[in-house]
Amino acid sequence: MSDATPRFLDWDTQFFGVRIASLSALDTGPLDGAAMEQALAWCRDERIACLYLRSDSDDVTTLRAAGAHAFRFVDVRVTLDCPVGTMPMPTVHEGVRTAKATDVPALRAIAAYNHRNTRFYADGRFDPARCDELYATWIEKSVNGWAERVLVSDAGAGALGYLSIHLRPEETAEIGLVGLAREAQGQGLGKKLVESSLAWMRSKGLQRATVVTQGRNIAAQRLYQAAGFRTRSMELWHHRWFDAS
Image (cartoon, rainbow, N blue to C red):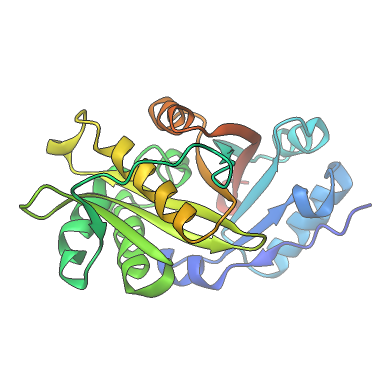
């Protein structure tokens, strides 16, 4: 049987105010009923309120065990990648610049409503206001150094959108958060941010770009595919709340 001991999540616990842990079948291998019972017993001993479970979309063993043990399906995690080192040189668009500390209030306001198709909202148990604050905090931390670079779209009146970039091993960069102000949507600014981010990666000698989005976010998938990304993997997120058992 796989070692199905979950990992306690300090940051999530502090942020949401309940004890949270995570378990990944990508690390353990497929989780059968016995392994799932082991994980749930650990959670009860540790007074865990919510357990996140992540698995490959083709991992039927874990999918069945999750369904049999009262997990709630909340998201499809789609990872796309792009060979930025060998693709035609991306365009650097006018009006896209590096974020500044003075942009943070505007970016926080945009982030607070831009990510409502993610698993935290889909779960239905997390306070929506805390979910809004999660992404506002995320983009603020990104501007303040957590991300390698945050690009913003600015036509002269202030930031109307953002895209964060994180460096990863093996000459890879990952696109983190992408969001646009309501009044800026449908104007091609997302495309400009993505293409400008690829140009920045290319200028740094990076060879590969990755991005994660939701299975329900078809618009985002089409945006990345138009920029040269292709789907690499699909995974499933389930959540288990213990006061519901």
